[in-house]
Length: 233
Image 1 (cartoon, rainbow, N blue to C red):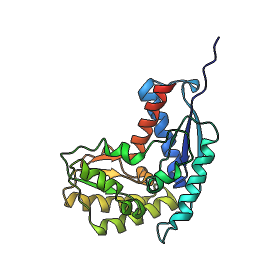
Image 2: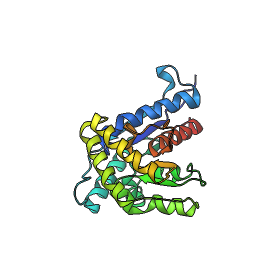
Image 3: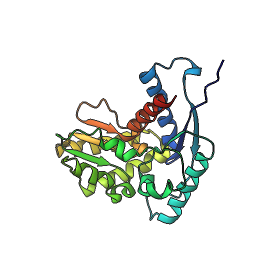
């Protein structure tokens, strides 16, 4: 019989390291929900590169050093013969155009994919690293879609503390305590939609939260990755 070519999904992860395994779980869940994957053989070939990068929450990030690190990572991943690449890290997308220059494989853009699913009739906020916030990519996307955006500088301090805690200890009791403080702040400002624009935050924020519509950029990227896989397999 004719052997079909293996379709390989590429995931450039490790930013941060603790967000890698939750993202892979999201991809596998999408395989189940999108095309009823059941047996081991039903799932895609996935090549995961967990890339340690010079990214820091508590100090200045060297843009050139960080972008070069990610660029080398994605070029290495592309060289393994993958058919499509996902980068489950919002901060890395600051350098998106630079890092994909020498890559001849389609690369999904987590920010573009997430903005598409945010409803335009609700007050929204973005929770992300300062690096992602400073790119203004999400804010510009919301504005161009006519979505009301609210954010307070004090929230960023809490978000930084939360991401630092998750990177160090995962979904710890302290991480959930910080998250609950932040939730109360957002509720007090009548925020309706939360965009989780940092893959680390997925471990504490629950999309079934009754008080908010939570749009998780990681989950949307996983959904789109499997959608593309279904198209080409």
